[in-house]
Length: 255
Image (cartoon, rainbow, N blue to C red; front, side):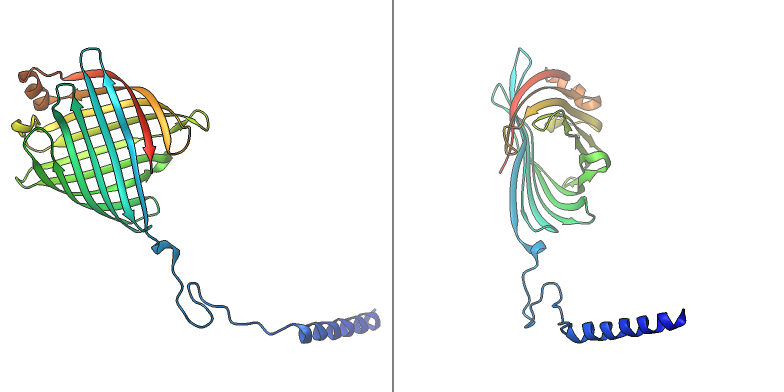
């Protein structure tokens, strides 16, 4: 048996030596982002992009009075660092502008799914202007909820918190049902802006949109606008409603 194995092993060694002699020597591979000559190549995550989108561009109707509501965001930057502009507000049927909030933020990616954001917020509408410092997070929470949670401190020393969340439920590849909620809380009352301390207001809705393309999707839905506590008391004194259910029709779009 051994007399058969030894000649076979010797033959394998000869073949292996011949194959090694024919194999060309390995060349040094350049490190990522480097050429062989040592020149640095552009890193793709430093490319600057820009994005603008409107989650809400809609008319709101309840039979007695109509509103136009917008809520949009835009950013420019890289995968890790961005400058944001956020704007929202409601134009009433009588021409007054309510809930005008405009934010200018810098964001930095802190995890795969969340950015840390900080900057300024200005409340600019038909009521006296207020300015705030802002710090919060924005991103994709578990189960694919879009989430924004931001804290604010005003120039008068007031504190505020805003929570926004939404979820896209795909009924088909083009038909999407989106529940959405926005909640505001304040540490102190601001009567001239009709804002009370504590749990102030909620804006929540259910929208059904059809995406003709990813950039253009008309929708219909129903929303509830509610005011609570001191904010509701201020509204009643001014002859305003403290809770409305409205039908909506609008467009979800991005560029």
